[in-house]
Image (cartoon, rainbow, N blue to C red; front, side, top):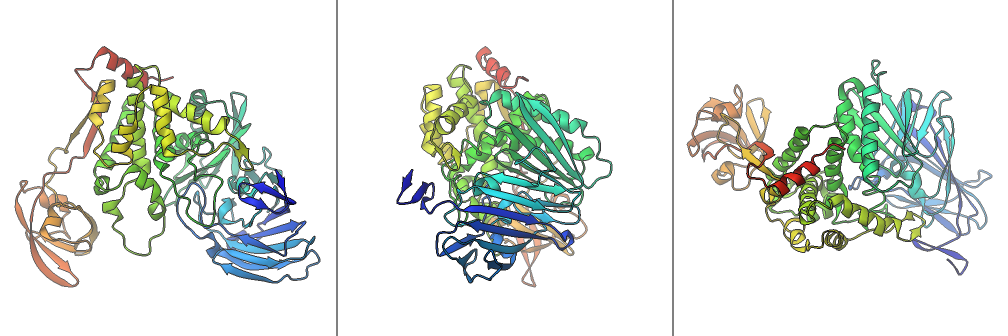
Length: 603
């Protein structure tokens, strides 16, 4: 809708669209530098602001990508320099002339292969948009042409184009530009298959010479894609791209969802790590529907300069984890036992977190910006005060699914709730420059559950999602003729209630369980445990030293704190339950068994 010579967009009244052309140039990859040029034509304003994002969607942490920007410059079309100034940590203002062109150049240092950062080296350039591309303030909705300049034998692989030889790409907006990662490489295979008339491409970048056999990987992806596309509404995309990296010397893997692609980064090789890659792919592919289209209100369009808070990441990420598990089962890639074991392990993980008593699923979502792979310069107490919205959200997905099935006598599942929300908030909602759909709020999830089941989920949300009440595992599992069995491992030792790391002269305490044996005795984080009742912890591990003692025994421990030694007596607690399993309930009714069989069926 036009107004006063401008254009109304999601960001408010903006000036007329710019003609924007971006160029990526990789000419000395061993420097880990990528050159970026941005040309803005038809400039009407007296100045333009070029902004580097502080974060990238999908990872809820402020990274300040501008840290790696260097050698910024600005000039006119005739190469005359333009005045510019840096306004804050991520914004450069360039003076301009009406009707003129502004040409900005800068370089980005990139040497991190993750779903958030970028890497340029002698073998490839892997670019995640927010970490390399600035945007022109007020012009995120404007279309962008992207030119790639890289070694002649390097392919350009992205969700923008089906041809790896194409080097001129087009994005409908800045948001789409940075939501489409680029893998530019000479050593990357590309395979393809079809599902429901859509093209699915699989690009594999590997450092292993014996990784030519991708048959198991492709077979597994075909099964996953088939199962998930059969379960969800028909896609509104023509092609989807998996970009998989297999790296032998990687310290931590990763996965990141995008509008019509994903990047999955795995430690190891194709031969060794196909199963892990498929398990990650199950999660990331489901994000096509849950997050990239059906999304919480804060997740698009984005403010890239600051945190975008949401209380619904437990739904966006946790339910995606749950459905990744369920589709691994339904596709036949997992057995029932594997599926139930993974869910039991999720419960074990949550129950061993002290923060489970303090932090709700909504609070974990809202405060993700503190701890979602966020760099910490000060010591925190997160180990005792936080939980993962991935973890608790996956368990809530299981509980909500079983509740939905039970309350509808097996006629509906949680997937019906997601389909309803997908229709309400994506398919049937207005279109903006960002694309179809609008974001949902927490109350909309409750309303959808109530609508599908004809019952009231308000108390469930109040107690278990907004609140921190203990989750009703056995009460809900019994609806499907199942039960949770919890116990300690045979011959498990009593516990101090500490997390430790080895040290040359003992074991150093890294975490203390609030209310546990060590906490009650006055032990502290960073204390160095020298011995247990004069039995050295330098020559024997903590479990071995504690095993001879009964629960409740009072055991003296020599402790070094700030260079001084003292002897502290600790009263030992019972062994920590570590064996969690979900098993059939002998007293299950036929109705409960029917729900269980439908839930665990391979489709």
